[in-house]
Length: 395
Image 1 (cartoon, rainbow, N blue to C red):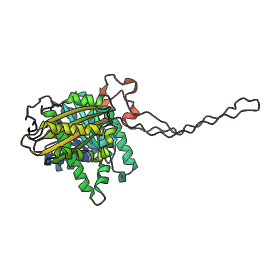
Image 2: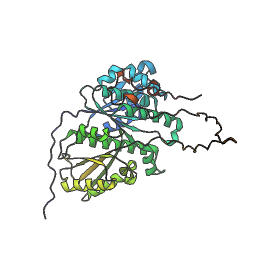
Image 3: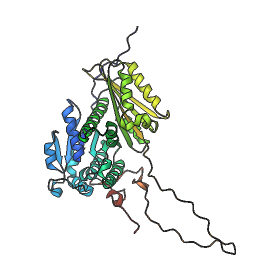
Image 4: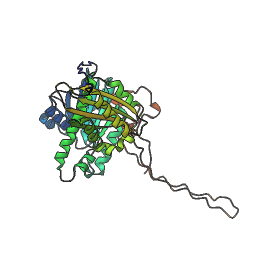
């Protein structure tokens, strides 16, 4: 019987893809510290925070403290405006981050002051410098309260307007899947581990030519037709049936909801990383299984490579773009027929009072498609009340 054709090792380094992972705020710094502990090699890691003590405790070699003169070296006490001012105050330091960088992953946990306020500023600066910026964010848990959820949602909306794509990690779903008997610390550790594995797999695919190569232009194609909102999931397996097992693990990932998420996606990037024993048949099996899980009308991009020194192991990572759901609006009751006078003419009736002001999703409005006007990290074409997170009331 003919041996399955194996993927030829190819470790040519593509110089253009110079990658950096930046952890912003408490959750982001914690995530990159975890990556530093488990990666023997990988992209450059940077920790950015207002809290000097947390930076000192981080395992990451490169640390940048922002807004020391504003926060006195402490955190932002949950105030995003303070976090924003902190990043703007050290604009030159933030800008220097992106020297000789092509791709930046900004990792943060939204809902806090530094993360929610500073991350959008840093993302804007990255785009000013011509760096592709992918933001990897997690949202607060339900038990953290509605106010923190509201703050986080505002930060998410701002990040979508000033980055190339936002990847949202579902920590709440992860905890639900693990069950109540697992500790929160254990759940967060697992979330950090999955994030590290997913980002490293993407980095390796962009870095090596492999047999099927992906680059930054493929990422741009993935998100440019959608709302720049993505999900990231990973599946790993070993053994003879590792291709089938890796896909099964991928589809069980909380973010994919048992594969249902793939039926809603509009574009998928599939990365397959194996060892020197990875075969073309295994690549074909993985891509075929993922294709079957979609709605069929989807753009599919595939990258595959063999990792030196590895055998009997397969990692499948999926970056899926989707249209963000529109805000749910309250259903309006049909307007009643106007009463008529004895002469048969409609009576005049009062206009209903407007109870709240409803605005579209934050965006560039009439300036969409026009080169943005940036000043100290702010896109001046976006209305001030949106940039500053001001809520307008009708009374």
